[in-house]
Image 1 (tube, rainbow, N blue to C red):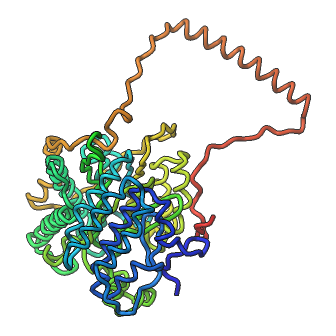
Image 2: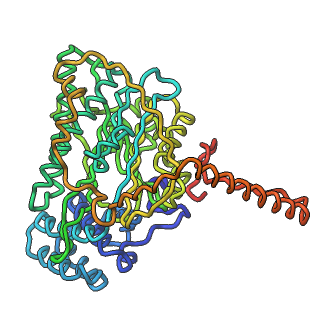
Length: 535
C-alpha cells in the first residue's frame, strides 16, 4: 500500500516543495524547476499537471516526488505554471531572480509548448552548477562468483584501465552477458570495447563545440551509439548463424559525466557543467547514494516492469509471475530499430556515490539492504572505493552467489578533495579469459591497438586545475650505510630502555589493568539479517 510513497526512514513525509524552496541552494532551486518542466508535458496529456502546483509536490534532496495525483481532470494552462513560478521569485536566491523573471515572461509569450524556455532554463542550470568545483574518483571490478565457471560480465573501468586516463573518470559501464544465450561473454566485451571508442569520439566532438549541446541532442547521440553497438553484435550473430536463444546478447548500464565547459559569469573561466547521463538496457542498475538516501535511477527492462508500464497490474502483483525477471530487451538480440534504451540526464549538485552493478548484486535488494554499511565510511574517509567495491562483491557472492557480479563505484565531490591516507593494497591482476572465435570485424574491435583511442585527446580531466596539481617532492640525499646502521642501533636502544621503564612503572601503579587495543575501522562483514536504514 505504501510502496514508493515519499516518506523518510522515520515514516515522515518529505518536505513540501514550497516549504523547502527558500532554503535551497540556487543550483537546486533551478534543478527543481527543470524537473517540473520535464514533468509538465506528460502530466498535461493526462490532465494531471495541476498536481505539480499543489502541496503534493515533495522534495527528497535534489529529486521531486509526488504524494498523489490530482484527478479532478483540470485543464491546467501555461499561465498557471507562470503564476506558480512567479510567486517563487521573491524567495529565490538573488543570483537567479532576474533570469527567472525573464523565463516567466517567456512562458506568458509562448503558445502550447514549453520547449522555447528549455534552452534558457538549461543555460541557467548549468551556469549555477559550474560555480561548484567538481572532482571524481572511480573504481570498478568484476568477479565470476562461487557457482559459475566463467564470467559473462564486463565492466569499465577496471584497475588496469585506471592508468590510461583516456576516459577515466568520465565513463563508467557494466555489461552482463545474457544468461542462457551462448557467447554472452563475447557480447559483453564487444559492447564495452565498442562503446569506449564511440564515446571517446563524442567527447572529442563536444570539446570542440563553442555552444552548449542540449540534453536532447546528447541523449540522441548516446542512443545512436547504443544502436550502432547493438547492430555490431546482431551482425556477429547473423554471420555465425545464431538463432533464438543461441543469439548472444548483453545488458548495459552506462554513466557518462559529460564535461561541457560553461562560464558561470563573464569574468570567470569555463568550468565543468556537472551533467551526468545514465543509459540502460536490460536489468543492470544505477543507484545514487548520499549520506541520507539510496535512490534507484533506472528501471529494469523485464516482464514485471513491462506489465506495470502497460497498466496491467501493480508491481508487487507483477512480481508473482514466474517470468517476472525475464528480460524484454538486451543489446544484440534483435536489430537496433527494435530496441528502446532509456537515457536520462541528471545533475551532480551534491556529494554522492554513483553505483553501477549487475544483477549479481542487485538481486534480492542487497544494495538497498547494505548501503548504510559503507556509504558513511566513504564520505568520512574511513574506507576507500576499492575496499567498498571488494565488500560489495563479497556480499553478492555470499548472499546471492548464483551469478557473476560486476560493480563500478564513482565518488563525486563538489568541494576541493581532501587528502585522505588509505591503505590500498594492489589487487591481483584479473585472469584473461579465452575468447570464442569472432569475425574479423569483431576481432578488430576487441583487439585493436589502443593507439587509436590515445590519439583522440579529450579536454582537461575533471581534476585538472590549480587545486588538483601536486608538486613532486624532491628526493632526500641518501645516507651512507654505516651512518644509517649506527643511528638505527641508537634509536632502538633508547626506545627499548624507555619502553621497559614505562611498562615497569605502569605495572607498579596498576598491575591489574590490561593494555587497550586499537583497531583501524573496517567495513563490517555481510550480516545475515536485512540492514535497516536507521541503523
